[in-house]
Length: 183
Image 1 (tube, rainbow, N blue to C red):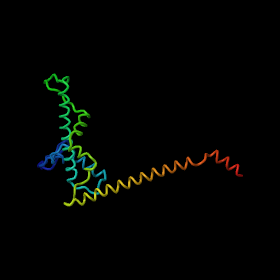
Image 2: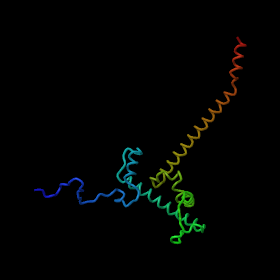
Image 3: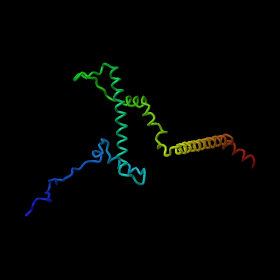
C-alpha cells in the first residue's frame, strides 16, 4: 500500500519545508542580485568573484538610485510648485513627474554625487595610514598623463613632419619633367 509520502503525481507540486526565495529577497534588496552576479561572471572583470560581491554591488546601486530618485523628485516637486498649471483634478495634488532634466539638476546640485561621479573618486581609498598608496596612485596617474602627453606630442610632430615633407617635395608632374630633362 502507498502511504502518499514522497510520490508526486503529474501536475501536483511537492510540498517543501522551506520556501524558495531569491538572493535579492534574502538580502532585503529590490535590485536583482542574481542578474548582477551573472553579469559579474560573464563580464570577466576578475577570474573569481566571492558570493558577497553581487550582493554588495546591488546594495550600492540600489542606494545610489534611491538617493538620485529622491533628489530628482524634490526637484520635480519644486518645478511643479512654480507651475500652477499641473493640478491633478482627482485629488487636488500637483502631479510630479521626473524627467531627465530633473535627474541632471539633482546630480549637479548635490556635492556628494558630483564627488561620487567624478573620475578621481573611482579608485579605492588609502591602504596605509601614511597615505603612501595615495602617493603611488597619484604618481601613477601623473606618469600615465606624462606618457600620454609625450605620445600626443610625438604624434603631432610626426604628422607635422610628414605634412612638411609632402609640401617640400615637388609635384609628380614637375619631377617627371625634371627626370626627362636630366636624361
